[in-house]
Length: 225
Ligand code: SAM
View 1 (tube, rainbow, N blue to C red):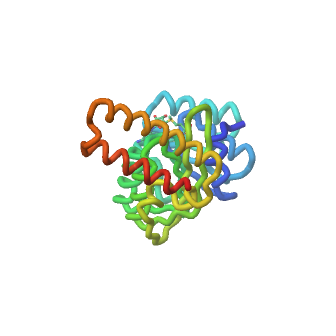
View 2 (spheres, rainbow, N blue to C red):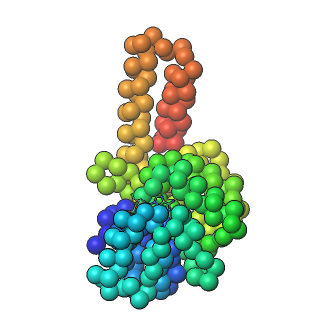
View 3 (cartoon, rainbow, N blue to C red):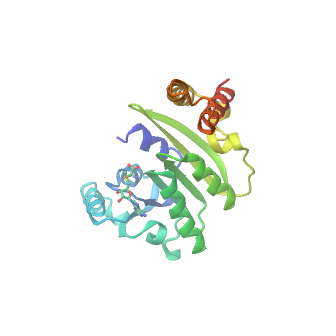
């Protein structure tokens, strides 16, 4: 049983995929997909030995090691052309790190049919990277676990022009406006309200920082309305 976050990632993986899960840690996601015969094969990429050992242990325990391989590598260096990987998942890392991994891969001219990305932070940076590198977002989801909100972004090769609001809030998420999406941004509104109040009390209501937070506040209200 996957966590709601990883299940939401799994739901976007095409049936029959040859998957690379980068930064896999315990390999829960690929192991679950292999056990359900949802995917054909998985590469489990890890930059650290400890997590790679965890992953290999999990593969053995769940008896799927004949259809998966753990590799110690930085990002998508784990994948070679001969692997015929068509789908990449990168979940549970910051958006800057995800973009860096994608950037390094694209500089080696790697390209994949489907990217399923779950940045913990800086989602906008990931969307901007995708748009600039000829990937088109075809699906998104947002899930909540405890007090955290996680966005999942699915992209395929293609051209797309995203507006500033699309980049910040997600082209699908901001239109679908699910209860989880509204809850995420309401939390941000509450946080910004506190910041603005503090700045006012500190007599900093005329500063650049104040105006920037205020602009952000109004942008969020616009998207939520
Ligand atoms: N993907 C799993 C999930 O979503 O639950 C595990 C996420 S865990 C928080 C992040 C993992 O990414 C760590 O195990 C870390 O070692 C690995 N990692 C960080 N940078 C990496 C990189 N450049 N290449 C491969 N793995 C990396």
